[in-house]
Image 1 (cartoon, helix red, strand yellow):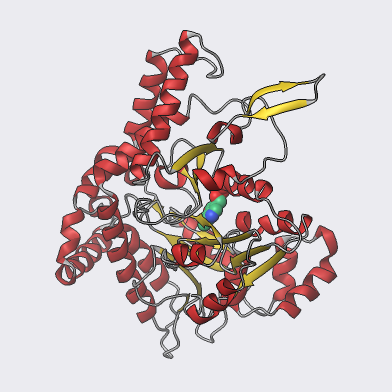
Image 2 (cartoon, rainbow, N blue to C red):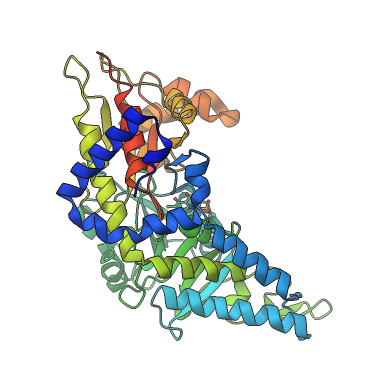
Length: 478
Ligand SMILES: Cc1ncc(COP(=O)(O)O)c(C=O)c1O
């Protein structure tokens, strides 16, 4: 159940004792023991190489069996470019279409309702919506402060078409949205206009899970809803039989590590039909003519898949889905929630000898309505923030992979760190167009200009969170 065997004796004893205490409080953790078997069997390299992996929101990890099964598939068949009707092409098309159906099934989506557009990643799925949404002057793009930059970037498309960008604020310290404020924003939909509302099902900064019931509420008021599910779906069930967002963006490598370079836009068919692609390409058209200067876009998903799809890697998505299905999303969810709750309690209990807290956690301080992502800064005994880049380096020296910075989510970061618009504008004005992240950090000082993030996932275990807690404890001053 632990990898205590690989540790020096004293540490191994500490780990065993802590785990026994944890199991005493959370006997239900034992129901997730199957994940330890999967880890031993299929992710053995993690412990063999001594990695403590705590960056699942950066990327999921792949099982050895996914890679093995994929290479067997590739070596045992001949796949040709799917845009044809020869036998090897038909074989590729068959697997692509089977994968599309499997993705819909995995998310409980009705095949009559949703289409799967394969993309390179979640960012490309988001860009497809942004560049194709029929924004016109007077239309609105509403989004939470708490969003990845690949959602923030859609504002450039709405503005180019004369539409307005509206940002829904977050309330510290929980970093959630005030429901009354949300209601006011939603009520401001322009009747008969194009209103697009985008938010993450789970924040990649704080781990906050924004309610999925916003989807139907927003739609009832006239909004199309774009759900960024990239950080949510690796450890949570997204049931598209129950929730019906117009668009969902995700990356498969975040769910199960392999293949990289494949994501999806899941779109309700009527919503997809309302999008206008700004160009056409090979693969996206039924017909095109040079002399007649005309083209007819292919209906549905193919009209959004530019050029040749990644036909050797997309079939590997099914192998990842099968891995998650064999473990059970609910089981992964349960384990991550329990480990995350334990880690929060431990981190918040750490105090320097003078009583000052070591850890400043951003976002919820319990495991309620949140996922397994924790953003924090460490403070020395005088209360000063320990530079997050130093933390990344020293944790790395202990084999811990975590992430620091603002995780491409500047809105949540700015609210969490208490940065004002004026301060940031001043820095941008001073830095001009060549400003780098380090310039911004230096400018914003003495505030902390970033945070430390640990995130749990598919095969996280108690030893992982224990190792991080142990690392944190090592930062305490006596
Ligand atoms: C919430 C969220 N949305 C979008 C993305 C972008 O994903 P990708 O880089 O795979 O396009 C990420 C990546 O971390 C994310 O966490």
